[in-house]
Length: 376
Ligand code: GLU
Image 1 (cartoon, helix red, strand yellow):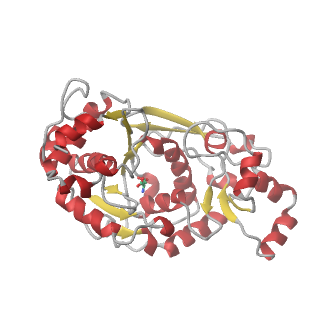
Image 2 (spheres, rainbow, N blue to C red; image 1 turned 120 degrees about the horizontal axis):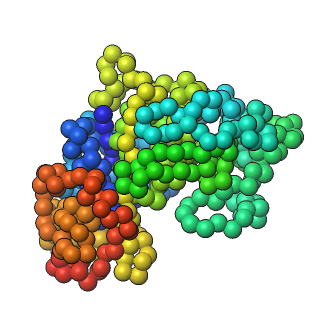
Image 3 (tube, helix red, strand yellow; image 1 turned 45 degrees about the vertical axis):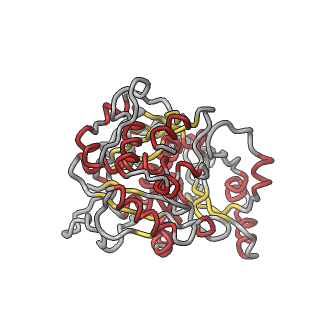
């Protein structure tokens, strides 16, 4: 059952996403499984023309192969619309009507949607008329990553004044669509970070599934795609751990809503149609992030880490893969070893999750040592 690469085509491949993709490739190939490529170009304003082709060429050059044709999110608006339409038929209780029973350690929910003051009346998907400024003004200060827990303004509007919400929709007032999250805890096992628990309502909140400009959100698109493509091996950065809990919830809701994978265009849909999405084991692995010496996350704009710059200075694929394999922990203890060039196939020979999780701290990329290794 396949894993996936899911790059956002915003530039050349760089050390950060090569590291993540090497992890994904090694995970899938070490099980003898397929690897699918999905170009996450749904957020069209962010897409750099030509970048998807450059990234695919970079992956080939690095020896990181995939099976079948790449899937472009930009060509799947109809699928996302259909998925959202299915979810619109549910209430928050329907989304969560049975405990998580997939074998991938989604343990039964703690608490239930019944704890919710307006349980049973909250549609799972609801329109939100708030502007960013409204949300900022109404939100408690947030620590940490990209989530601002939505304060629930329009969810209360729908519950208390449904006619007013209807009127605003009839007036074509600008609105996004949100998914209502239950006050419930999602538990899953991560290959690197072990057991993870997030309370949906408190840690995540009602997130946007379709933006007010009509673009389907990352969270919806990724969940629909992973389900539709039959993905069972998800490897990516640890900044998406919290999103993973949300995606488990959306996935469950899609299955409960009767959302069916599309035509079997992908090589891994069983031809006999025996794909039972609610019956699969999914493996999740979230990788430590890479920081610079000052503890800041590597930004894609750090151009010296971009494959275009590295190859212009004569870097070889073996050097780059070796460096990323070292970052993953596959060349021994990061503190006491120096990176060594190796091919993707050699990395496959030494890959294990034990080696990666031996050190779960974020990786530090020392620019001086990096430059010396690559002869920059
Ligand atoms: N497209 C996302 C990125 O480039 C990855 C999303 C995912 O793996 O779910 O960061």
